[in-house]
Length: 316
Image 1 (cartoon, rainbow, N blue to C red):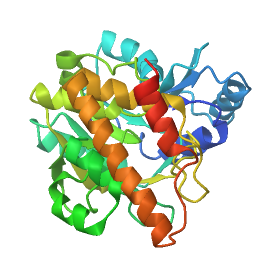
Image 2: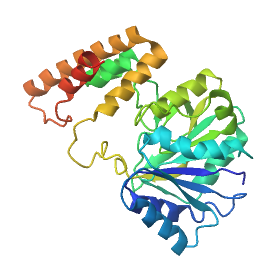
Image 3: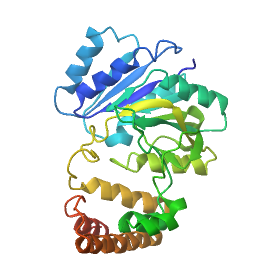
């Protein structure tokens, strides 16, 4: 099996990282010169000590290593800390970016590598992410657009049906297929993609960085595919604490809005971004009124309308 180093970025989730490493033991055995790099991303706690001890105690040191970063650089910046030296000398054919809140099912890595070997024209591929009971999560997506922002805000079945080809998160499919972008929780990248477009944009702190990366790759002629034969358990929201659907919604952090703003302005310009903002606010306002009239439960993050307005129209 071709070389495919794995990069895991930790921020105060040492237990999850150790479980993830444990799931990789059998996966890396068949690989040529296996290497897993854990970036301790400025946690400011004893994460590094816990992970380092687990690597030593379990004799994983011949394939797993720990890198320390003083500051929390976010997802893109944390991955880039490991990617720079990995790609600088004797670069591998592929690199797998893996979330700490994942557990690799048997054969998941081989399926990704075999797929990339068969499809030399593909630049990026993502796994089928799933709950621990095997329930699939939506992991293959479309790029955000003005129509998709309206659909996301208004949440009306008729509108969603009319805009079915613009939905950011379409229904899960069981077949390999091209998509716009895949979740960065388990994303394999061909070396030539980095050669063509560089590393991830570390001006994103968290969220939208993989969307931006896949868009840059697609514009450079490297499409993205979804590979459902590669099964990876994703404990949604355990690493970030923001998207855990099993708990009441938390207030959306400022960095999410900043990342969204950066994505739209960088890739589509200020006018397009402003239009996307207006249609989302319009759709979301209509949804909030309909929710009151129909007495639907309120599952939105606290202060979402105000925060969206504030960070997009009142903050530079």
